[in-house]
Image (cartoon, rainbow, N blue to C red; front, side, top):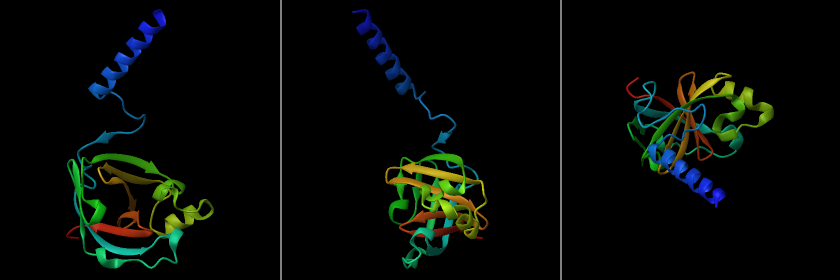
Length: 157
């Protein structure tokens, strides 16, 4: 009986924590507002084969399309249009880029060839169509999408 009362109290406490939104992942700041560093429109300036799919010819039809980082949503072609967007800023090492898509033996070299620093800022957008990691690179942002690297530059620049 005492055990059941304790379990019921723990269950109620967990429900209260989740209801109040107090459950967050350690070390991660999640927000519905786009971070100032990326907020607004970005243009897909180039598309190239991903290092893990070098024989896969890139589909360049999205070049010139705009991806917009907006409060609570993201806009763009295909799956990049989504609602319920939550933004998270994390630091990534080469072996963690593109959801671990770079070969461990060549991750640092491949990241450098893409213009990505050994420790880079990643802007993670999680929304109703999926989770997207945009990595800071020398000339803007890069994202792995459909075995390709999309290069984004701030719109109008």
